[in-house]
Amino acid sequence: MDAYRGFVMLLMMAEILQFERISEALPNSSFWHFLAHHQSHVAWYGCSLHDLIQPSFSFLVGVALPYSVASQVASDKPFSTLFLRALRRSLVLVLLGILLRSVGREQTNFTFEDTLTQIGLGYPFLFLLGFGSSRTGWIALAVILVGYWAAFIAYPLPDAAFDYAAVGVPADWPHHASGLSAHFNKNSNLAWAFDTWFLNLFPRAKPFLFNGGGYATLSFIPTLGTMVLGLQAGRWLRTKLSPNELLKRFILAGVVGLLAGWVLEVTNICPVVKRIWTPAWVLFSGGWCFLLLALFYYLIDVRTWRGWAFPLVVIGMNSIAIYCLVHLIDQFIIGFFRTHFGPSFFLILGTPYESLVSGLAALFVFWLILYWMYRKRLFIRV
Image (cartoon, rainbow, N blue to C red; front, side):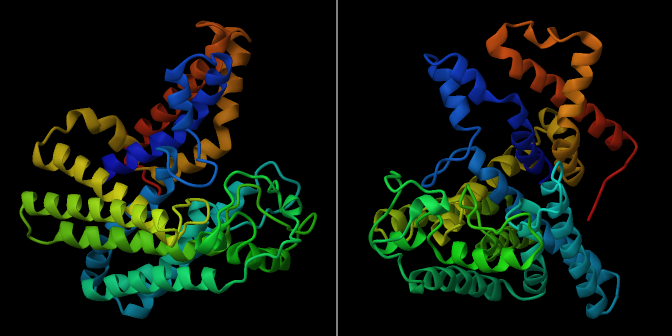
């Protein structure tokens, strides 16, 4: 789990490499175009490697929960105390997400689509499900996915006079869908309507009209579905199943998830959209999460090839710390190098690769900080 989590966090950290800038500087390079695509979110439909960061992080929260529940039950503390602790963890995650989104702004930026806030909003419900049976978990997953889909379908479609430009979507945007999938179009859906009410309850410099990326607060509900998938995977890991049986389950769950998400999209029942975390996205991205978990389990636990994963483990064991560091001091580190090594230090490979060199320098410093924390046994837990 730590290696998988470290891999996920490394993908997040690697944003600082800015492959898109290199691709723009070298427009004829299919190699850099490919890397740039997988280091950015798709416009609306589909999936890139970068799109799997948040679902993987959420999935792993679920995977870890059975171990946490077992440890807390063994402490003999009353359930009320344990649940209050879960509520406190939820609140800390939500507030930390808001804090990080407010860095550099003139006032608190009350937004709830950040990875930490999404997990925090759903965590109390996941905690309760952790004390239930596996069957209860599958039923809860079905209720979440079907209920969320039905709520979107029940929300009326915009009329012909709807001003898409007013909500940041060009009228000729190529990703407008028709039929049932039209209920999941950008900034004209249930989640967008909810946020135009909910987010305006908080102090704002100007009224909230839309999120430029289409992200929404209500996505925490299907994100809970992703965490429930992880919860089920964590339960399998804690059983006495043989390694081969575990691998079969992970791979089967992965394939079923991918196929289910794809079928829902091609039948126009529900599109695969990460930005509003559609039910089809839960299944599709969950499928990838199961397959990635299977890969790391096979390499590390079955084949016992562990040495290669140590750099990832160092990152994964302090995921909250690196999440905060990347948001807070990335530019400080790059500025440090420019100040003390000269403004041309990052041009050693040429102008097109400036962001690559500066990003690698920052990644190296980040890893050294995490390695120091690892050696000192300093692990930040929420």
